[in-house]
Length: 111
Length: 115
View (tube, rainbow over the protein chains, first blue to last red):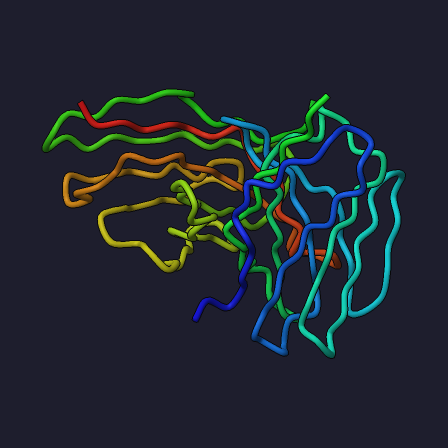
């Protein structure tokens, strides 16, 4: 079993929809949680960064961490065609700088 | 303009040939990383370096080699021993002083194909 599980999709939604992207993990030592966005043939770019449990909001994006369930989510409100990309979750334990990545979810927002 | 520069963008390897991928950063980051990305498999760590003249194997180091002679540079060599080198290669770096040292910033990638 992989340490981090992420549904590869593709997930297709109409423009304006609320998108929910999720990852589950097995290592209870993970404390830092990140979401990266990767456009086709480009490098990943950091979207959201959270520590431990709770919510974090940045514009149309909200990251949630539920450590009791070992489950993290990224919500995108009012989705746009420009949000079409692969979304990668990543996480690491305290004191470590190595990241463990999910396989990535392909998101397609149709206009 | 601070960032991570990978070159070349596309690279072709002939059978039995070693090829070297370049990665340079001007972010003054101590730690640097190389990942391999295959469709549907996410990012897999090849090698990483936390300080000049030191590096550690990641999860899939076989058939690859690295050097870290300068803080700014972390080249990756794909050797002839790597039998399935076709992939997208990503270089990343992170700060190693203070938090958050585990946030990694990525270059634009190099796509390697076998002729």
